[in-house]
Amino acid sequence: MDSAVEDDLYKRTKALLEPGDIELNGVIVDTDLTNDEEPTLHQATLDVGNVIAAAAGIEPTDTYVYSGNDDEEFGINQHQGLTLDGDEFVWECQQLLREGTYKVVFYYEASADQTAIVEGVEGLGFEATSVRGE
Image (cartoon, rainbow, N blue to C red; front, side, top):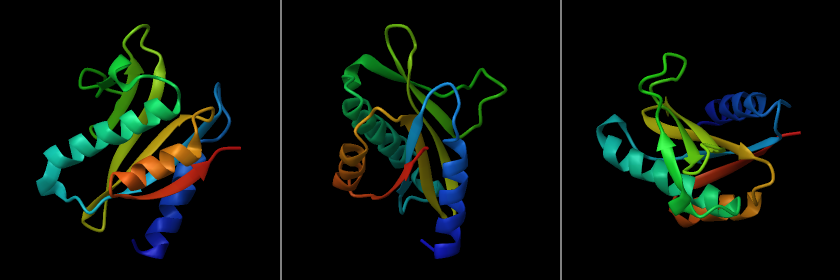
């Protein structure tokens, strides 16, 4: 990834993690997937979401993905991982097309094991950039 693009994306991700109701960390997943590979991008999003859930101590089978198709405040390439019981936040992501390929920015509660998430994403075959909140 171009270093200027990488720096900008890192700064934007860091801004998303600014203190709010909960402490957040994030990971930028650098894929080589293009617009023509939407089904593969979708599966990659689910796979990374499962890594995050597991690192947060939640069984991936106890989560589902909400894509907000019925919510005007939700972006078209924005998704949330929620728990089946109570719709609790597990992760959220934005799929961003940069220089012809997708970079997917995930954020989640800082209590999740950041090292396990980065290693898990890399184990899926993607480059991962860790972004820690404050």
